Length: 499
Image (cartoon, rainbow, N blue to C red; front, side):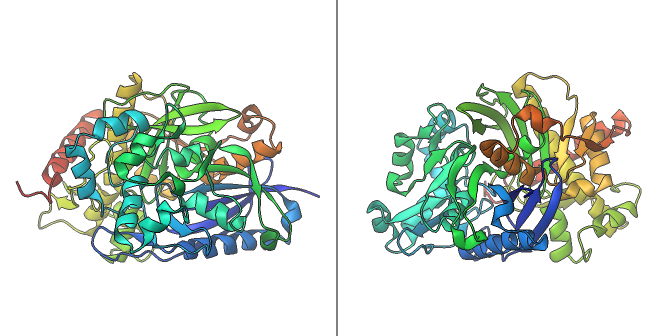
């Protein structure tokens, strides 16, 4: 009987399930979007039960499409949106509040207060993270402090906290396992990446009871088996990895210094730094990439909060286009941006700027400005933000010249964006043949755990480049555009603060 690896890719806007064969090829795929909730400006929530239902349904759909069953699944790998925070009742299995999504900014002022109290350096040195509303710990505290009765239940040990991976494992094992992996734990702001354990001082700073926390595991091992009610048989869960680390693994960036960028709702750059934690001098994050067979690999990371989401905004809020792919034709209708620059700081700016009070702006508008110019400026804003991150990453790593970057995610199908990105970076972009690299990373980690693939050397045989984008734009024009981009950034900076 032929076996496959099932990857569960739980993203910010949809849940997906993908079956891979030994060549790393997609055999079957199912996807389902779920509701986004915006209770107040700057707040973003998901219903944890909707996450579960959507993920369970696409897992069943991907298998049934091929007339397969649980016996055909060698292992399940999970990759997930990170930092998103869920707390649930261990007895009833019900969430005590909606999932607070990584994009949510409700705890910005609380983070500012902690910074004024002098905790920023302690948090950064222990976790590799900046004190920001992006991460899980302040979200946990908000739920504990604002949902009636929750803190008392948490202190009694009745409640469980988890990022989305923990929630899915809990549900797929019918509440038998409360775990996470190192790549997700290190994004909570409660995990010490030097000692590789939950940190008592950090728990005290955020006033979070340790009884809430899951057990931390490696990124590739057999953690548990699914409940037989899901697939008709018990299937091993063998890999867990946060989405960006999973993409790094799926892109086969196994050598220190290799960089990948995932373009999606946001954009996420990650560089493999091997067994060394590199402390950033340029406002990047030091993070755990993965742990396999007791060996920890670290990474530098930078995050763009609004990447492909700027295209969604033009579609859903501004009605410039009906479907996202139309953005390329609209942007192609003009020769250039016409002097228009768009800063998509809808939820503040991520690395290397970390300005949570910046807000979106379109500048350079004239009487001749049309929808095409704004569409082009929107696409260019994605590439500008990524370029800022690459420069910061190279400076931290001591690498003067980028020799190529591997890219993935739906926006990489946009040739205008990819070509402009290569022009800015003055370096080739390599897009792999296999598009689903985040899910593929989770599949590889799960497959390694059960011997489906023998080693990373075995996996690397599957990598093939679909297309390479090389720089074409004149350097003088690139430098001119970068000047006005950074000028526009300065205009949007700190917008919400009255000074």
